[in-house]
Length: 231
Ligand SMILES: Nc1nc2c(ncn2[C@@H]2O[C@H](COP(=O)(O)OP(=O)(O)OP(=O)(O)O)[C@@H](O)[C@H]2O)c(=O)[nH]1
Ligand SMILES: [Mg+2]
Image (cartoon, rainbow, N blue to C red; front, side):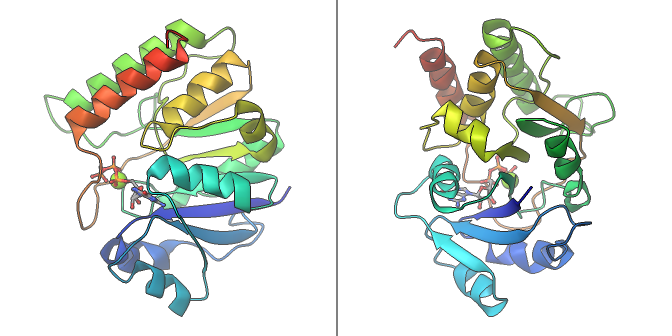
């Protein structure tokens, strides 16, 4: 099985300086066969960073994190894709875990920040508004769309892998930060095999989030609504 590791970035030069050196070169042990960067129009030297290191860059013509996924599915001929955001939130130590699950027949593999054994960025705080909101979205996705298989504990996390076959079946079209949620809900609807493993979420190492909580949360509600088929 040919697996492509897709690095998703928009203006992440500072983060890449710290995280990229931690990403193993493609190999059997690393769990992927090539690395491709999908860049959403960076202007801070991110693209130059990749080029200096010989990383293939596919540049988006349309903006949006969802567009990066859709572009990967259109442009890259691979059997499966691992999506990784090199900003510090995602643990590189998990990269080799995806292949095992894909080869055992999973269609979608999600690194979960919520299941037993996982650590969420907010876990050291008493108040965990983002985790609670995420868990509400998880509950609604499971109640609304799960027909069989285990309860999905982290339906929106970006750290995930999907086979090309599954991506083709799901006909995804979300252009924004709701792409992962759409992917999970459609995979549940289609009874695809969704597998999660526990991960440890880290803090962003530099720069700022492009997804402000309240407006992104509202977009998730809109996505849930549209997936429920009400509009
Ligand atoms: N290719 C591409 N990547 C994007 C785009 N927008 C955001 N990203 C990347 O997606 C990843 C996650 O975005 P963030 O803004 O960090 O969102 P977040 O992880 O919810 O926020 P933090 O917790 O602050 O890190 C980062 O690596 C971004 O650079 C885009 O339009 N295109
Ligand atoms: Mg992030």
